[in-house]
Image (cartoon, rainbow, N blue to C red; front, side):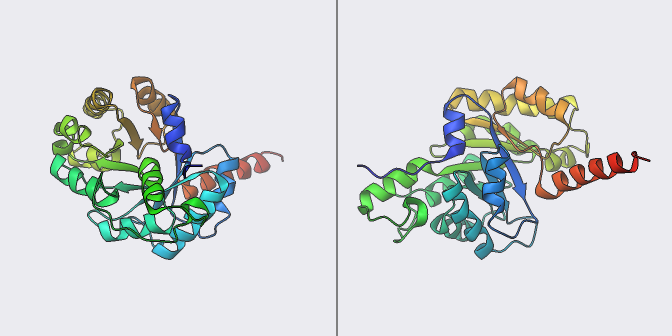
Length: 261
């Protein structure tokens, strides 16, 4: 039997469904993976850019996620390809690379994160993606290439203007708008429903449709805005983080209990 690696995120998207992810910034134990799978999520956004989670913790959660059937995807700091490949070797099924402005940058990222003939990623043995089962090197690399999901974040007006060219790069699977940073760059911080933001989403969605890629949304928690952008064609969705969802649920529960008297 040929080696295969399952990626729940990719399977959802291939089926025309939403791929729902949760941003992990505070979780530090491996049980977060099966817990989020049981909660209905398809992928974990392991954030190594904006918090203190280290590489070892991200890898431990990734291995647990593989067993739970939820896709571990790590955001690394901008340009840190060495960190990205170490996460992938340790069990990750994809990378989110922030602050990508040009197709040249996207091409370099794709080449670094895929094995030949798709790219130039260095080969390592004993990977957890196949449960450490013995498989030929050719089979292993083909299976992992097929499962690996590469997301680039567009966070500036320059990036949005280059969306079509970025989406055309082989090996780039998704263009995800970093809405917070884009709004800041446009001088409209927090105005996620502004028509300039909506126009940026339309540009990215059109580029993704043209090139068979998937548009993603990040930085927005407002459900009505998320519905708007999903209705436009976004399919990769991050509706919240571990801390934001914890605080929201805890606040709601506390208020309900206070109202008992």
